[in-house]
Image (cartoon, rainbow, N blue to C red; front, top):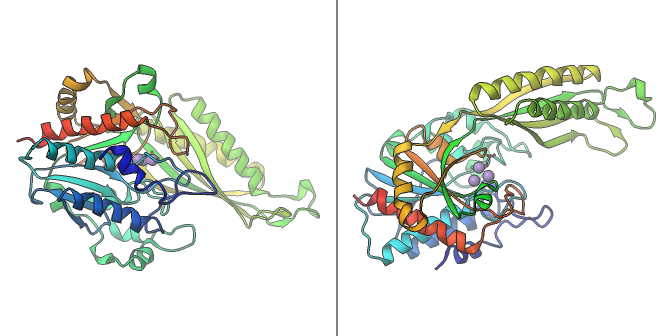
Length: 404
Ligand code: GLV
Ligand code: MN
Ligand code: MN
Ligand code: MN
């Protein structure tokens, strides 16, 4: 097969007619068929599949022993996401295994292909849910209390999917069996396109915080409430959005985004009573993100109070900066050299399960060129030949790391 053909098998799963692209979230209608695809792809290669207690899938080439070399990515997406963020790393992993099998390579260590659960955090607000639970970065009890947009707790969604909530949580024994992890991912920028090269390794993931902001005002009638009588949380939230832009702009290369807003109750002729907005901040160092947050918060409070409203702030997640393992990255780069020459190690502003696993397992990443540079949107792209190059690169990495 090819990577492109593997992705074509799931091209209709989780398509979002309204937003464009794909909306694939934990335990939604697309989740089970995507998991079936993973199982079928593994079975076709003779790999045995198991699901761990945290809803992550593992396909084993060889006995599930110790010294494991793992690869993979995630099957979920953001709302209206692209076709590659996540599935490319899984399709390329299966294709790499197929290539290694075809050439008669026998791994000296067990190889695992993984699909991690809810990497985007789009349903329950916690990015890298599956790997956070698995590594204990997030404790199970707190995670299970999280609610989705419909008010369903993760615990209830877990049970409704037929899974056991008692099995959720850290599995240090499984983590201890991992010798290395390599995640292949579509690049979420234009760096490789601008450099004219198809593949790179990754040097680091910049730190990332997410907060939920609740702006409360006074719900009232749009026609009878004069402008000077209002405490309009939508206007207050607009001031918050501008404060985020202003503060992030003044601290390059920091990034500040409000990409999701709920207006409650949400009527054309209704002055809202409450606005919930989700804030995403990233910067070069952990302290830079914290300092940016404090500056945003001060400016946001001032703006909200000027509108006669109040502001409540809840931290949803904080992911520290990750520098990938230099030794594994160097071994992967060396393995790529015959086919790809000297590849750069580039930093990224996007989060990955590789970043969570890196705290426990020597971890590296591979990026595949993205001609549009767009991600988390339907315009995300990768040329077919670059997807195949990704599988070739990943096969080289696995040959090196699992070769004994
Ligand atoms: C996940 O892709 C993130 O970086 O938000
Ligand atoms: Mn991803
Ligand atoms: Mn993503
Ligand atoms: Mn991600």
